[in-house]
Image 1 (cartoon, rainbow, N blue to C red):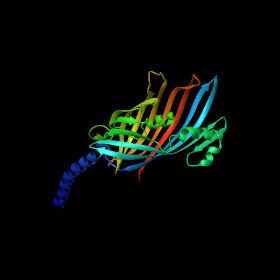
Image 2 (image 1 turned 135 degrees about the vertical axis):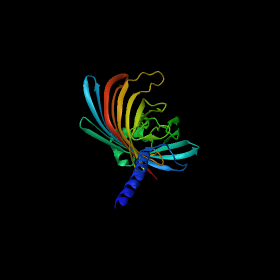
Image 3 (image 1 turned 30 degrees about the vertical axis):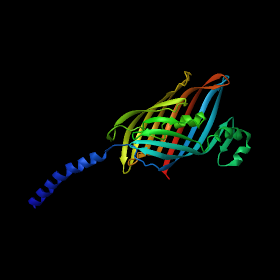
Image 4 (image 1 turned 45 degrees about the horizontal axis):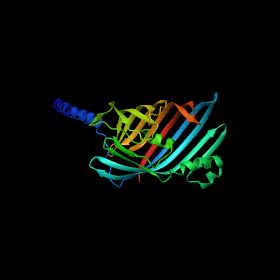
Length: 279
């Protein structure tokens, strides 16, 4: 009996360190993009925000809910570099101000019967079916962006927000480890984002990242724009491909809105939810 207990103890002493090493090994991973030319992903982007601004001494509040459906196509992979084209397939926008609600839906022609919705449609319809292209490496560093087909500032700013892609650290990262990454702004975007990422959890084929970022103005052609804000939330990504599964980011922004040559202070509070699925 004593020999039996000794054998069990010996086996435990041998196995436990090995099990612990495996457990610790599973809590670190190298995150990177690993997708193939021809792969396609469908994005659904929802922006639920409140915009409060002062105009002529009067405080106004605009509630805005925007839904975008987009398709990203991996056009080319050369080594560890990717060329990606993202097409805007559909847009739905609901705005409420002064007790009035207006809904524009690119997939519902009847929504344009409302004159205010038709006015929104004049601008939005110009970007339906249009794409923007970018080149990035396996760690998410964007080296080139072409958004010349897009003219809407709200769309461009949300593309620049960093809700679709993460910037990954070189080499393996462990649970609890943090790293910094600046989201490259699109050339004509008003905003730029500096982000800190933290690996919060590894679970099966998913990694959960914590995001803590600051938003500032991306001054174009020496134009001075006041914009300051924060962005916090979480992002789930596929460990094998590095691709986004879901992100939920809360934004708080203070800025100046310019209209008819006048600037008005404004605040934007909202949540940006993005999901992605391979087609």
